[in-house]
Image (cartoon, rainbow, N blue to C red; front, side):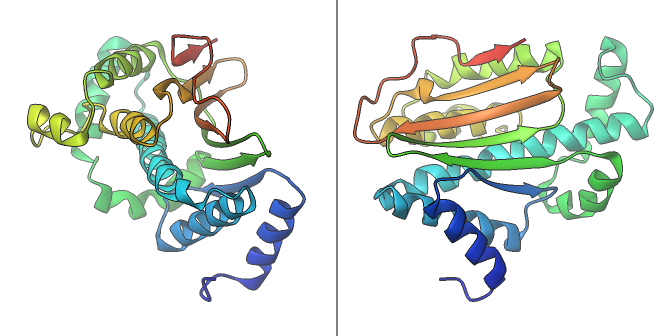
Amino acid sequence: MDASLDPIFREAVDRGVLEGKKISLITYVLGDAGENKLKYILSAVLNKVGRPDLMELFYTSAKELIVNSTKAAIKRMIFDEMRLNIRNLEDYEKGMKLFKTNLNERKFPAYKQKMKEHGYQVKITCIHTPEKVDIEIRNNFPLIPKEAERIKEKFLNAKKYDNLFEFFMEHGDNTEGAGMGITMVEILLSQSGFDRRLFSIYSSERKRETVARVEVPLGGSVNGNSNIEQLFVE
């Protein structure tokens, strides 16, 4: 038990897990306190379903996907501040140059208040049943076609690697934007004995959201769903 966590938070999580409810956490830039809360939620859920051995898979995957979601929100914030249209090709190229100069994760905390002001957030939800555990990382905006195209390429590229050493050997220091997060989640699933297709990203223009999801079956089949695609855009 983490004594630094608010007892009210721990009690709420414990009660929710016991009752089989979804557990959600909203963040802007995940700091140490947020990481501790995420660990507590995952630990409580995985202990409930008797699979504490899946902690590394879920925690590392969640952190990678949260970072990716935070970057996507910061990207939009920079476009907003520069009054650039993210859907316009010329504006997109101009904005991406500015975004890449502000991509350093050490700068993330400086964006926390700005994300609140701009209405951007990252919602983490853990769903559990006796049959499976899902974790969803949700942005409150959809992908634009250019992003969907790049993510599809990253999913295809990730299939080439069985471990991160191979990935780093090929990309060297140029891992930013090369799909390291997607590759890492796929490798973690594969090394844990699960189908890589259990990781997917869904984006909806109608619902104004993008959801990265890792769903792991418990004690049953480790095969992914029948869809070969891992990116779903509607």
